[in-house]
Length: 107
Image (cartoon, rainbow, N blue to C red; front, side, top):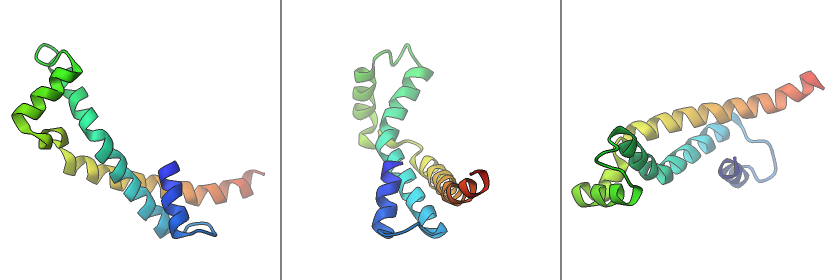
């Protein structure tokens, strides 16, 4: 939530974000978070799928780098980013809608 809050505060420094701002900020943070974490996920997945070939984290990283270069750490990037953008935009839009709606109905 901290990255999302940072982007929203840059767009709307003095108020509640619009639905569009929530969609935008959620999309950006989804893309940023997966861009950072995808290499770790690729290594983890390879280790899980073939533990005999990839028994150790460092060896797996070396093998990917040697055979595929840095690009190997971003296998499936377009699918992951597409999912992250849609999912996070939707999640944060709903979050903003219900965070103002529910307290007035419950309290």
